[in-house]
Image (cartoon, rainbow, N blue to C red; front, side, top):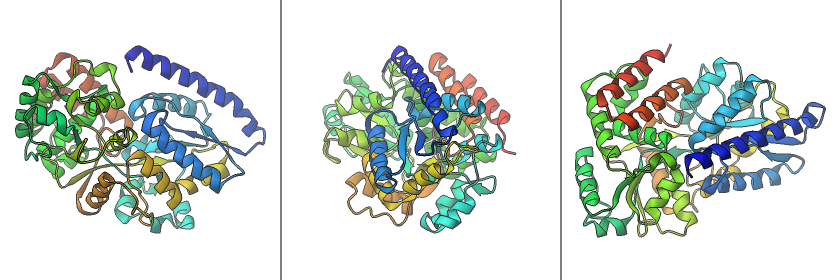
Length: 423
């Protein structure tokens, strides 16, 4: 989708939300059957996952009416802007999607979402979700959202036929960024796009995997607690690798979103794509076979590390329908909801009691990795940092995409860290 179409879509979505808000006056005057669920799952495999979840919700709560408040835009960038305006104007939806983790701190500090810790105990969710996940959900001493899934951000998707055409072994493992870049250069020499990428947030996703590869899990984690120096030589090396990777991507990246970048691999126009495992649903949607038509392995240098994020849902303060909100959260936490949603979206259930025996081959590898690998929190998807810090990093990434100045890029990242130091 080009920039003009994206802007138009965002504008139309905002207008539709104003219409929903106007209709919401019925709820304020006493009608409590509507449950407006605000997400950025507006198209493609994400919309398919939402539809599967709504079907379960309708079955579990036939007395309630689901109202779709989705706003299009990869990683929720457009949706978050619309949502913040509504929250500031005292017009919250019944519930809204947010990435679990540090992203929630902005809403918590603004007093916009409720602490769900007591609800977790009442519903038994504190026993249903694994302790390690609960620890990552906790912010400011409480739990403020219910996770619908677990995603992995550090995945490298490839088209084996394209690699064969370029003389590169399919399913080849790389121990380092340098080894991978060497093969990307060979692919480029064949006139093929080595690595597809899209707009700014997908470039941030790529950056975080390079940082993880070059710094290791401990060093990567240190970026967020201050124990790793953003101005250090190891970060500089990672930024130089990132710069080289960006030079090996498609030139139209700013006009694309993640489905477009993934499609380049599906269609055989690009060899590789770094993307979270929501890409799995895009391959499955087009009847592609894992291991034959496409492969998925951890980004070179990150094997044994699970770069974690989770979509989750909140209970806004002074929401229009508290009982409806709790009903939606019940569906999110239910095994039926977790299985239906994650099978469609390419992710894996957050619940330990969900039956995953019917999940696909890729998802089985993700389930295994989630249980065995070292877990780190995603930058691009709100688990590692506040919204403000991510915004500052995204601005630095966007600027670098234009000037390719590594020194200035690192300086911008240092300043972003200084401006957003954890208290």
